[in-house]
Length: 170
Image (cartoon, rainbow, N blue to C red; front, side, top):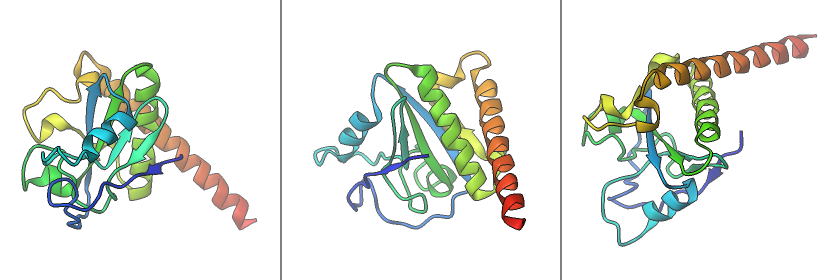
């Protein structure tokens, strides 16, 4: 999976370079923006809000804004567990929402696989604050269906890795 790395400049507002040991992936969503547009907005010098994400994903690309082992201000809980123990992943929907959600599911599965976590480590932004986020997944049964997609993709990754190990052992 290709991830473009456009790290935000180090600063006290967006990227304080505080190391974290993530235990969760917090899912956010925002309608009407692309990953690149959101990156530009986050990088704007005039914007002094403490708001950032580790990863931005839309139907076309994935952008890493902050290294996954650094603090990002995304959970809305100040010095709480949301900011200090989770990877913030923003799903940007502005066109083909189905494709953006599918790409986010694949990325989330890759992260779960990389860290050795189960889908229990995937949480909604709403867990840390009372906002209706990720709005794109909170209506109806979308969240549970999306998590099933994440789990299926993770199983696919595990199976492919097992096949590679077996071939390597020959």
